[in-house]
Image (cartoon, rainbow, N blue to C red; front, side, top):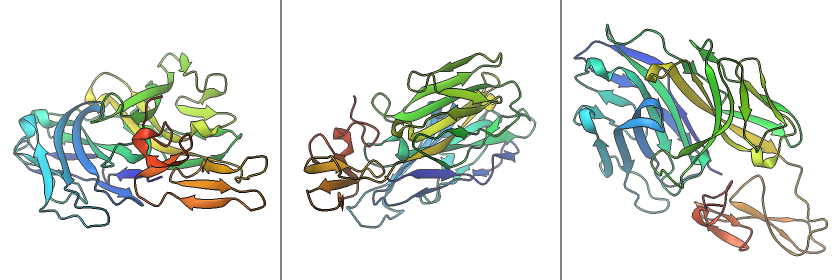
Amino acid sequence: QSIMTVRTTHTEVEVHAGGTVELPCSYQLANDTQPPVISWLKGASPDRSTKVFKGNYNWQGEGLGFVESDSYKESFGDFRGRASVANLAAPTLRLTHVHPQDGGRYWCQVAQWSIRTEFGLDAKSVVLKVTGHTPSNNVHVSTAEVVQVDEGNDITMTCPCTDCANANVTWYTGPTFFENYETGTYQPLANKNQFGITWFSSEIAGRASFSGARNLVLRAAKITDAGRVWCELATGQGELDADRSSTILKVQLEPFTCDGKPTGLYADPTACDYYYQCIPGYPPLHRPCGYAGMVFNEEMQYCDWDINVPPPCGSKPV
């Protein structure tokens, strides 16, 4: 499955009021032929934010290139006419005539064009400091891009941070896009508040714990644990008091076998756009769906659009 990865070269930049500043951002999306949607947001998190800028290339068709001159770009609210992205392939945000109130946390969010799953959206924050107007301290979280565990083994997911003493830590999964198509909806997975009181969702209760102040331990990892997991740390209610960062959790399964299975098609548990065909007397036949954006629908026994397939491979409500 295509995995979106967003990166920033700086966690914060500073500018004098009235000046011009650039907030850096880049992204990587392997094996996807459709143009992504670029959003710059301002707020404590992507789903608690206001829109600054949005843009995307106009899709010409499968396998055709993208042209900067044939794209949609729009800035919003007080940022209209001041916020721009020159190149959507490297979506650094340029902000002119900076106001004192522009200081805060900005999110570079990049999402797949089509109906999306959690793998196809990522976001990273950059703090903009306006000299003499923005507090000097801000929380910053930086997690590993990918971690992997064999099914049945234990794993500890770490959440390194700065300026985060006595923080409230929440781990999320997602996002899903049933309710909010712009930024998605994040589902709480675990929480530990500043007093040390912990909570775990029903999916991991009984086999999860915290290690130290922030790190999440999962015991006996299951395939259903795989996905995008976010660590958010908050020391207060302001934009600069909270940050979150995502990790792709991969759960490695035992090799697929047709032993004991009747003739038929079976979803590849490690690759949503592949499936296995079992025929008596033959080894498993590994077949691709063959078209970008399609995943295998085991219930219907054919490759389908992800909107028709339940998670984790699709976005159909369960």
